[in-house]
Length: 285
Image (cartoon, rainbow, N blue to C red; front, side, top):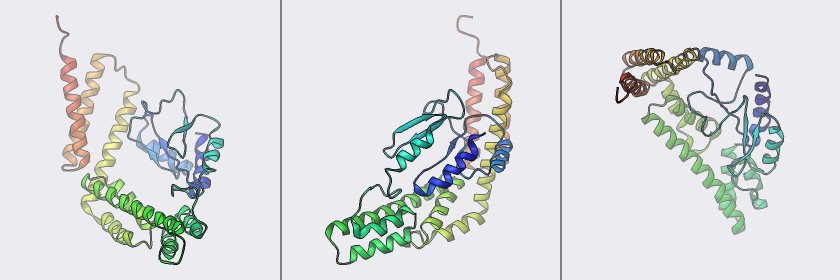
């Protein structure tokens, strides 16, 4: 818990310089307790609640911090010393997100605007270089910035569209919000604010969000309750599986046609299959 305020500080201080802070939550507390903790410590960075992180990010103790460097490789792991590792990696980044450490002097202003996530300004400045009387090297760098912004907008739009098909309202909202805020003034992101308003007012989207929350809340409660159980005991495990099946069946009934209901069906079917398999006597008996 002592790390949480410091993580907020890192997020605020270094976020504009290119640092991305997020938490991989790997314990089994109820959702209400987690939200209370987030509110109490005013956590502003993302927390991934529903995932299995043990294989990729094993944690012999908590909290554990990984610093992923500019080359995509883990450069630090541990409970201490990560501030220094962060500063060392950020020193390599002159224009956060651009993917280049150097540009022609005539393009410096556009690159700096890009690094500050002032993308509309970056487009304006880079376009002036591309269309002006500048060296080929400068125009190539300016075009690189324009292409980078265009690619980012296209990727966010595509991810939003995919999320809509998958009925993933949270991801769709996040993508549209990013487009509406960070890329405000960019032509290809002009439709994002209106799309965001429509999504917020969409009743089907509201149902999906409610179902998703119900699923996450219930699964957190099941995990929390399982903490005091001896799941190596066959009878205890059987009762736990029945409890899981009952929850998932109820969610399917209360939130029909939603993505959460589809997920619940997958989990319910899994527990039913396991229940049958575990009820069979060992071969030869």
